[in-house]
Every structure is written in C-alpha cells, then in structure tokens.
Length: 512
Image 1 (cartoon, rainbow, N blue to C red):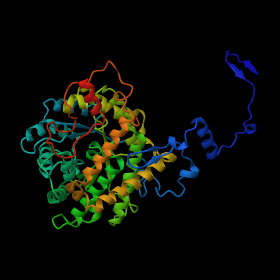
Image 2 (cartoon, rainbow, N blue to C red; image 1 turned 180 degrees about the vertical axis):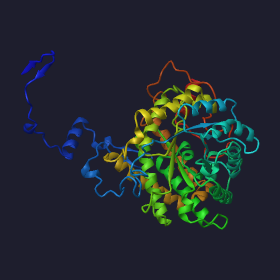
Image 3 (cartoon, helix red, strand yellow; image 1 turned 60 degrees about the horizontal axis):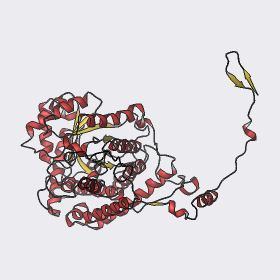
Image 4 (cartoon, rainbow, N blue to C red; image 1 turned 90 degrees about the horizontal axis):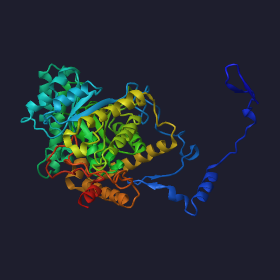
C-alpha cells in the first residue's frame, strides 16, 4: 500500500520480510544440465577454449573446483608475491612511461609536452648510435633529465649506450647516486630484436656480450645504486609471435642466464645471488586480453620467486624479492586498418597490466604502425591519457590484489605459471637461453606458435575487430611506414622480427 508524503513523494508502507524468501540451491551439475540443454545438442566441452599455451579455459569456475584454500599463492606482500610485491598494493599507481626516438627532430618538443602532461618517465627508443647520435641524445632528453624527469633506455642497449646516457645525465646535473633509471642492458633482446647484430650471432657472442654487460652493470651499481642496469625483455618474443607461456619462459631463462653470468662466470663480476638479482628488471608484453595479462604478471612473480629460492635468495624474509616489472602494450596486436580500435586494445592491455601489479607501464600510440616512430601528437597524448584516466580517475593502482577471489583468474595464474615453467625447463634442457637462441630452437618454437595463431585467426576462432570482423567498409588503410614507435626504422633483416597479427589481412586489402 502506497501513501503520499507532504512533499509529494510516494512512499511504500508495505514491509518486505527477507527471512521468508527462499532460494533454491543450484549445484554445478544443475548448471551443466541447464547449459547442455541450451546448447541444443552440442556437448558442454564446446564451451571450453584452448589457448596457444596449451591451457584450456572453462565456461564456469566454482569455489568447489577452483577454490584457493590450499593455494600456495600466499598473501599480498608475501612469497611467492603472486598477489603483489607489497601488502599495501600500489597506492601510488605505476610509473607512466613514453618511448621517444631521439633521432627525430621534433622529439625535444614532444618530450617537453609529455613531461608537463602527467608522464613520469621517458624511454629512449632503440636505433641510435652511441657515438654518432650523442648530440641528438643530449638534445632529446637533456633538458628533461636536468628538470628531474626519469630517463630510461629501451631493452637491448649496450654498455656503450648506457655510458653515453650516463654522461649526458651527468652533464645536465643529474645526481647519479639517486638515479632510478632502467638502462636496458640485454644482449638477448638485442639479438632477438635485430638491433646491434648486423649478422648471425652464436653462443660465444651472446655469452661474451652478457659478461661485458654484467661487468658494466656492477660498475654502474657503485655509481648509481638505485638504477636498474640489466633487463630481461620478453616483449621482443611476444611481438615475434610467442604465446604468453613462452614469453614468460624466455624471461625466466634470460634471468637465470644473468644470474649465472653475474655469479658464476669467470668473466663476470662474481656477485652474490641477492646482489645480482637486484640489478635486474623484467619487461613483458601486454596484449588485448586483460585476464591473460593479469595472470601473466602474477605468474611471472610466482616463477621468479621460485628461481630466486633455488639460488638461495629468500624473498620471504624481508621486504620482498628484488624484482621490478615493466609492461609495454603489444606491438603485434596493433593494426594499420581502422587504427582507432588500437585505443581500445591499449586500454584493455593497460587495465590488465595495472591489475597485475606492474611497477611501470608503456602504452604505444594508437597510430604507431601507420605513423612510424614519430607517431602523432594525438597518438602520444591519447597514450598518456590512457594511463592517467585509469590511474587517477579509475584508481586501479589503489586496489590490493584485484584478481584475488576470482576463481577464473586464480586458476589461470596457476596454469599459466605451470605452462611457463614447463617451457622454461625445455629452454634449460636445450642449454639455456643463449644456446636456445643461437641454435634457432627457440625461434622454431615461436614460429610454430605464430603459425598456430594465424590459423586461429583465419578460422575465425580469434577475432581482430576492424580487420577480420566488424570492418568499416569506408575506412582506408592508413598510409605511412610500418615501423612501430619504439622500434628502429630500417633495422637489419636479422633477429626474430615483429609479426603483427593483422598484417596479412591489411596486405590483402591493400592489393584488392
């Protein structure tokens, strides 16, 4: 029965007693029976999905089947740090990075705009020469560095590149003792990306380069104890076509290779494992599936903690493992056709990486494929704003263990970690990361996974919005170079290369 109050608002005088309401208990078997009836003769297994990693995902996850009571993931801030490196979560969010090519004339202006618009750090893209481009480096990042902006080097740089940047920073009054830069020393990434290797590489070359970089890292650590000289970059493998488990395995194997070189090799600096681990950072690729990105970030911390435990580094006794994670939105997922859709892909990838608890994040401009390394002012601005909206307005970084309690994400994290560990053991059985790279074995695995993804796209099992499905008939392929921002134009035809998922379909559209 309704009554009218003095202000004209209708009020209900009836009272509902919830204690008299009952709900029928529904079991998992009941749900399966109802689902099979709705499938009209198809088996329930038709709702399962097989990922490239060999991981099978189900349509329903329950506490009975996928509960976490006996879960070894621990608590936030405790080993194995699956749920985050700190108990308080990322209250301040993540570091916002932008990649710029110092060889481009407009870079100083673009960097100035970035650093007054919420960007925390600038990464110098690959491709520059340590001697010939020294002046361009100073012009491109000198003023920003002098103003206190953190400057990083992209993974795959050499000791000469790191030395050149440190010289520029020193000349611009940067306190090297308090430097927090990632210097990107990673010969494996240099080989995989095709940068710094003008021909084929062999095992001895890679090991010697890692030893040289390790010695430089030790020297840099004495001058800049807060910097991160070494890196294990998995994004170069993801952009070449590797599935998530193989990317993680490559990062773990690269990390183990660093530990061996730093601690055990006669040409290395001979540091203790805990000191060696503190020199190393990890970069992974963030793709368009937010759940996979979150699970990948969590699985990486879980697996690396296990590696460190094997090395005698007890992450449980102290503030946490000496591990910092940086994510970069995938180059492979970008499309030149209908490039506006790349904004949505980058947003989803950023969401997944933020929920995975990364320390730093780089978002590539949506027009990075069509415009090349220069991209556009709009592309760079949208990339920065993607960070800022999710970090400040959505406050993603303020949530502690955002994936915790999601039976799907908990199970996906565990299965991802197991799949990555199995592939990591295969790389180790092949002689380690350098041997697997030099022999071509890792490249063959990635090529097979790339072919499998191509087959899924061709069969319609994986959709590329704006390219294979929901195509804008009036859209024209964007003109311009196919080089991506942050990747050197005119790179030599070596390394694993970048294989964009949409490229075969864009090539067909351009010739039709």
